[in-house]
Image (cartoon, rainbow, N blue to C red; front, side, top):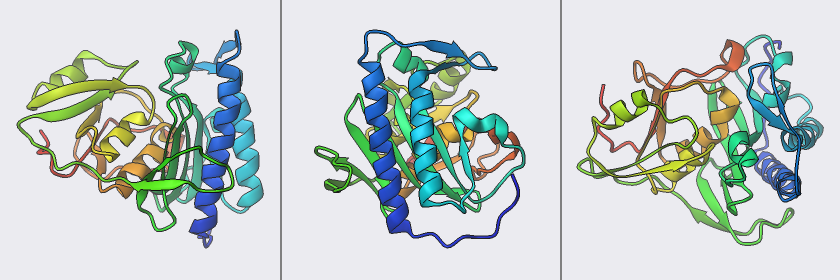
Length: 272
C-alpha cells in the first residue's frame, strides 16, 4: 500500500456512511446467525471465518470504496493484500468476535474506523445481537444511539463518557475468549471491586460508557480488532496506551499487528 497525500474528509458524511454500513452489515450477520446452521472455515492463522464475516466484509468494503474512493482501505478479510504501512486510512473488522458468533454467544461486533496520522479519530461499533450501537459523531464526541436504528435517520443519541474511577475498587473488563494467567496477575495488582468479561470490541465500549474503568489486553490483536473501539473510547475521554512502556498506541504499523495494551479511564492509577 503506497503512502498517500492527505485527503480532506467530510466528517458528517463519514459518520453517516460508517453508521449505515455497520447497520446493514449487522442485518446480514444476524440473518446468518439466526439460520439453522452456517459454515465455519479456518484461515491461514487457524482462526475461524464464517460466511457472515465474508458477506459483511464485501458489503462494507463496497460501500466505503464507493463513498470514499481515494481513501486507502484495510479490512481483516482482505488483510493479506496489504503490504506497506499507511498512516491515514479506513479500517474494518466486519465481524469481531467470530468465536462468540460461532458459539452463538452474542458478543460480536461490526467495526469501522477512520485513522488519521496513526490515530483512530472516528469509529463505529455495532453489536447487533446485543442491540447496542456506539460511534463518534462528526465532531469526534462519542455517543450510544438508542432506538430502532433506522438506516437513513439517526435516532436518539446518548452522550457517553468514561467514569471517574475509585482506585480502591475498580471495575475491570477482560476478554471472554482470550483470558490468561498473565492478565489475571496484572489485574491482581489493582484494587478491584468487580470484574466482567466481554467479547470483541465491546470491552472498549464498556470503558467508554463508564461501565468499566480498566481493560488490559496481554494477548495478540490486530489493528482492525481495536481501531473502532479505540476511537469510541477516545471520543468518550478514555485512553489506550502500550502495555510495555505506556507510550501512545498508534495505527498503520507494518503488518497491522498490535502490541499488548491498556485501555482505561484517565483517573485509573496505572501499575508500571
